[in-house]
Length: 470
Ligand code: UGA
Image (cartoon, rainbow, N blue to C red; front, side):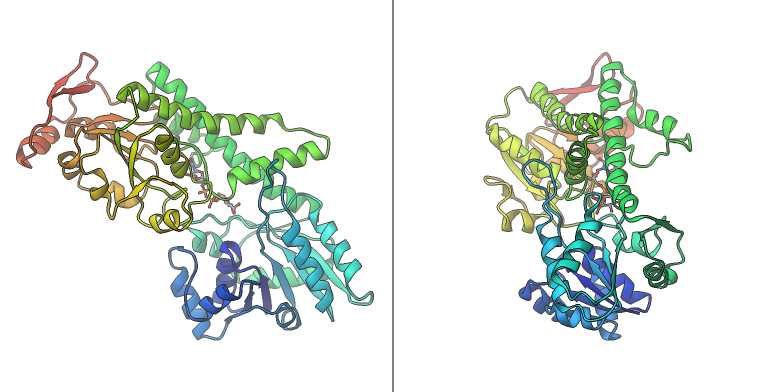
């Protein structure tokens, strides 16, 4: 089938490449001529595992092409997807100006029947407005249908999410459009849910808000675990084993970030208020998310006393691993919080350094070339994003390089007992090391066998938490 995707940002590009991969002929369109030029030269503007090869393969097979002309896209495709940004406004409501502009531009070049599919995340009832706009600006006799088809892919595993989706939601009020949409998705062999347009639009905001709620729920529990000596991971396992709850999205940490959850929760609050049915539960979700980072910094302050002039290494800048996306990243906010308090922050991220520099997101931060460089002479290491690279690092070398081996793990990446046995003063979210010396050998390895100069004399405290003194 011939498909055009308007908007070659994250969702548009990945979706276009996956449609081409299953055999459709896809045109990816964007009004940013530099982006189109770069894509034509094989330069992919974002990092997503596997995307570069996917694009190359499908461009070579002549199934994927790029254009800046909306007329070319609309003339040559049966189905037109809209995948343009829907950013948040200051009050949390959604800025729909890009969607409205695309609807007007499409109307002016629409010559025969097309299915117009909204893939961008939009407030309920946007489909109706898109249809009204096309009718208002287009030729009266041209037929078209508007469909809602929300996207559920996650950055970092977008290819897998798109090729093997849990479900495909198609919101349509037209049998003709539905038949065409089913042909688009037939190759994916995934369950298709058909709804009306309003329900499909609502599903997207409801899904993201529910996932954010799950994260805030476990984060609120992590505070209770810390106060009561329980282990949040065991609690998550215990409740997640109930199929009605499920274990995923119950990983306690510094809170959710990224270009979707913060924006979509705020949007859903605004939408619910606009339609006269406020959703205060979601305000609490936001509050817990903010408080989680504050709680973390308070604990850092409790340990280091004064943050001013402390040399703090931060691992991770992206909002999650396997992406170079630093939009609304909790890690970036954390770095800025620390800098505001006067700390000297050296940060490192496997893919995010360049973006942070380009966009000047953390003025005053020093960016290191590697994780080990970042910790040199640091008084504390803060882990803010759980990149697998950090899990695989030589922790004994980290210990050797640090001035004072204090680690604040904001994503529960490391094992508390291993960290304690290696000699670190270790803090994580909602977890404590088990009492007693579970593996004294590791500590000996770190201090003696690997030749670590003993900065500290480590003495177990009464409660089993190790503590050092110069
Ligand atoms: C999210 C949704 O998961 C996708 O289904 C949706 O399509 C997408 O938004 C979107 O609307 O476009 P994404 O933002 O890429 O995907 O990333 P997630 O994996 O959902 O993570 C979001 C944030 O939640 C990250 O900051 C992550 O660190 C945090 N998180 C996630 C937790 O703190 N704990 C968890 O257990 C899971």
